[in-house]
Structures are given as C-alpha cells and as structure tokens.
Image 1 (cartoon, one colour):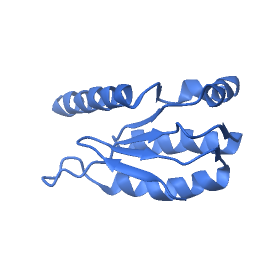
Image 2: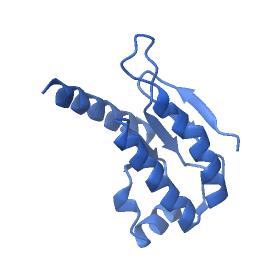
Image 3: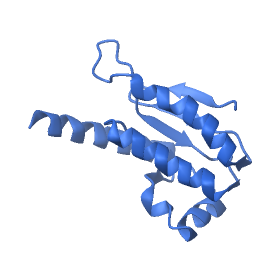
Image 4: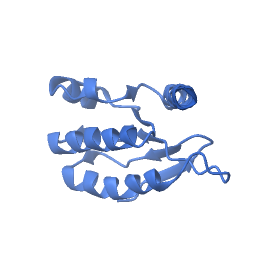
Length: 131
C-alpha cells in the first residue's frame, strides 16, 4: 500500500489512498503505523510517534478494516501516543456510526482539528507525567 506521509512537528499525517479500505489493506497499514510507536517523543532528536490518519479518499470500508483501525488506535493510546482519524467521507462516517465503531474512535472533521487534539493530548500527558 502506498500512503503519503507528511511529518509535522508533533505528528505524522498519513493519507491513505482510496477508494476502498479493506481488512487486508489495514493489515498493511498496521505494519506502516506501529513502528512509529518505537519512537520516543522525549528524545532530543524529537522523533514523533503521534499519528493523524487522513481518510479523505476512502469511500468505503469493510467492518474488519474498521475494527482494525480501532485496535490500532488502542495500541497507540496504550503507548502514550495520539492516533486521530480525520476527513472521513459522509458514507464512511455513517457506516462507522451504524456499526457502533465511531464512538470508539478519535475522529475529527479536519486535519487542523486533529492537530488540536494531538496538542491537547500531549499537554495532558505532560501534566500527568508531572504528578
């Protein structure tokens, strides 16, 4: 799977090509995403492990793929990293909602809002680490 990766200050913006996201593709996507968890955001070289997944080109996804995204997100949060999905097409958002997966995912309408979520979660982690 060819994804577009744009590394920002606090996250990697990863755009997934469309129009369909299948379970097989999410397995490949997992192999692309999970290595970011090996990065330590506190290292002096500033490696980033937060991910914003841009799904603007996805018109359809199957249930297994959606479930895999929920699992990947959970792995990120277990490792003190943010994982935000943004730019969902209306039909994909409705599919996730109908299958009760949307409420399990950290989803924003735009990349800019995803950036805000990552920043807030970074601040929250810093505050919790300070206690």
